[in-house]
Amino acid sequence: MASYRQILYHIIFRTKDSKSCLVEEHCSELYAYIIGIIKNKNCFHYQINGIEDHIHILCDLHPSIALADYLRDIKTSSSIWLKQTGKFPAFEGWADGYAALTYSWKDKDMIVKYIKNQKEHHKSINFDDELRRLLKDYGVEVNEKYFP
Image (cartoon, rainbow, N blue to C red; front, side, top):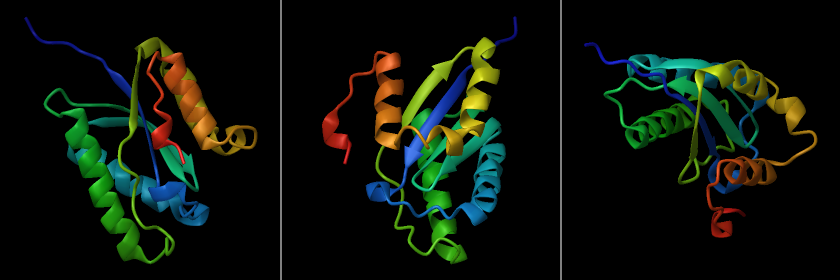
């Protein structure tokens, strides 16, 4: 029998010190670069978006890829790229850690819409409050020492 699986990850990570340094006019290039990393790992992205201080990705990982390795590679490669392009002069790096939440296939369209609407969404809630709410919704204990 063949092996089957479908695991959607909603991944969220922020800039170092939550610095607002992801220049909106160049973010499509950043997202395209990250999508290239995802494809090179034989993974699939459904949506990527963010605002000045963080990124959301909805993706499916290939079964041979460990989540921690996947995020390390995305953050390391994109950090180098961000610094080399000169288009994100205030970028100093990504913060340590990330949030990775799993969703069922039935939730995919809802999460895609949520990620697409990040700019509108963040007019009424800041990143820290958004992350706290998401973690609490998933029963993840919030450690306040990781919030600025």
